[in-house]
Image: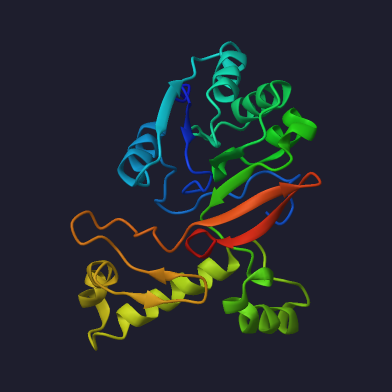
Amino acid sequence: MCDPPPGRHGHHRPDQPPGPHDPRRPHPPRRGRRRSRTPGEVGSAFRESTPTGATLLEHPLVRGDAGFGAVARKAVTGKADAVVLGSGDASRAARLATALADEGFTGARVALGSALGPAFLDGAGEAAEGWVFAEAYADPAALPAAEAFTAAHRKRFGAPPATWAAEAYDAVGLIARAAGTTSASGEVRSGIGGRIVRTEHRGIVRTLAFQASTRQVRYESGIFLYRIEQGRPRFLGPYGEL
């Protein structure tokens, strides 16, 4: 497997960036055809959504252990309100967190959800405190819209919903809604995939819909933020509501 491309971090002003139940177990696997956004895509997203009056600065991080201290010093001397790591590499995120802490950086620190895991928490130690991660899954036990789902799950299984449980429930709802638009049966239903990408389903966690031109999932309503507090990620809520 090839090494990931060099990570990039941005200084973002103002300090509100477009940002697991058990942090010590491996990061939840990504299922299906969903893929993580690349550093280049993250950079493009920030450039396209930079608020009026804000300044966005990009600094490449070379492969290896070098460069983190210099980047951290630039963030401090440049009085950046936020640092965003575009890489999903947990080990590199830990090194950046340590470098920022060593330089006394106190602004917002944000990374992709794929960088959250034992390698980050163990590697960064106390420097992990306050970091915010953007994830594609919610904590249904802490999400008001999923209160009924969580209660039903506890009643049926005697435990709160696991990671991705609510998202799986919504996905099934989308498939059922798409299937309900036709009375066809057998091989004729092989076209259900085409119906799914034309269907919009308001689930308990998010509204599921697809971009008409690319058939990719619209992620606007599907970003959730977690902040590291006392060594564990705490669910903050949907990005758009914070």
